[in-house]
Length: 226
Image 1 (cartoon, rainbow, N blue to C red):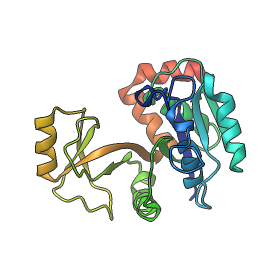
Image 2: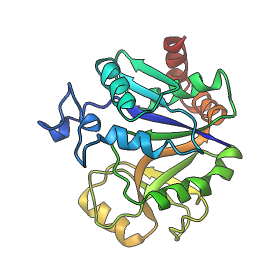
Image 3: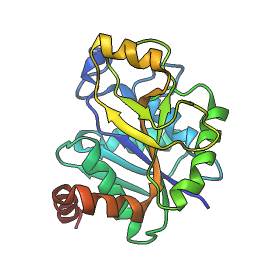
């Protein structure tokens, strides 16, 4: 079963000013090599096991998104343009509702556009390992094994003492960006991952989750999308 990538590229990237700025954020800048982070993300998710991507971006970036995709020979399935940024939650449900109109059983891989992922093989293996759980109705999130007590990332607490990624592990909780002492404790505990913000699920599963747990967001986004 092919996966539909949903690439989120609406952020303003203000933390890397002046290389990244509100009018031209970091995901569109060529930090590594000649291609932007957005372009490398789109290429990473363009293998034969993927469908054409759904892009969610902000109104100021509509033309740069289309131009950068054209430059690397990728034709998007849909480009959803937000008139006002509302962060990840509304962007995800907008994409899910859009895809579900034609295929509610579609597998969606939610991916921020500004990640650098050098180990492509491990990344793909992690996705492949998550597919059965996602098809069974689970919401799968991906984490990164921490190597220092970072306070700028959110964390995932696993419901197991192992970080074996050959099969999905039940998640106990999300942890917001911690203080230094808490980050040191989580690193030592060994059952925490950095939250990568990458998710895999079916369109109908995430729509059901929003309707159950974030009904106002679901209703507002559906009205806006309609």
